[in-house]
Image: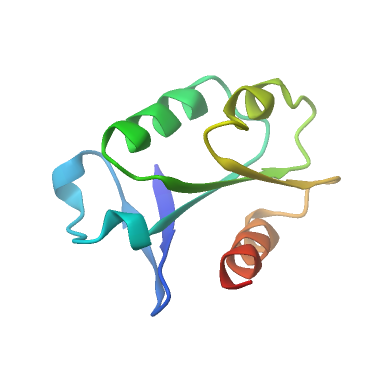
Length: 102
């Protein structure tokens, strides 16, 4: 899985498999962005694992998924941005970056 991590200086791709894979000193200043289209329940597990590792700023982009059940279960723990139709991962990331900047 690749999560896109945004901070005020730059955005970078980081493959996250375990906590030791990334070295970030100020987790509260990091925004985790997850573009998602028709996810399964593993998305909930990813969100829980991020929270367990003290990442509190999580933005999930619902990129026109057929069902929003999983997103509804996450809306109290993450910021959910929604596209009405599937626009692709690039547009999902742009939406999340715009949200983070504003």
